[in-house]
Length: 205
Image (cartoon, rainbow, N blue to C red; front, side, top):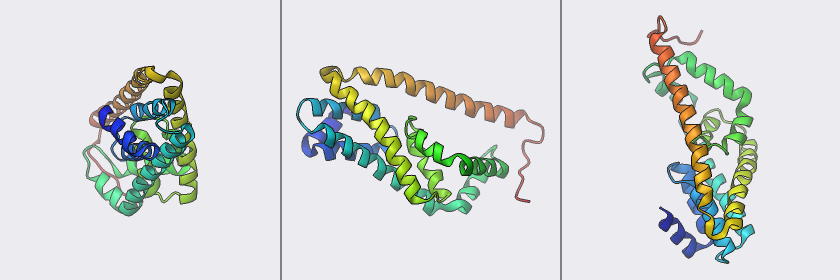
């Protein structure tokens, strides 16, 4: 993976870093914690400009997020509810509560979600489903992405040959986030399985 990303930057320069980040948004297993500090190291070694690295990686983040927003918008609320309602242990009331939460806190979710591994990509989908105003979505995505990207590009730039140290710290952060997420899902499943009347779904009204 590192060799492929490095080759992309060698061939395309800063736009290659932006393309890698756009793909990372669409395919979360591609690690931004590798791409961004590597772009910073490339800037430190003169293979691309630092400002260009920051601008292109942020542009890549926005393009990838916009693609997922579009997917959510095309899917739409009705299809999303229909699909989710067929999932085991999921009730329509769960979906409605999630929808209500996103309508109240969607702007914060989009901004801060850009700094949470995995969720930084996924948060764009409900934003599209709920048709968050596109200018607002793009502004929050740009700001959140610029902040996240700047931290890691600069870290790679300042560390130089030791840029890989960044990935170790971020891996710990990513692991904690994923453990908390898995624990939350397991808690939801446990409550739903052992709660009396858990098999009954409720519709609207």
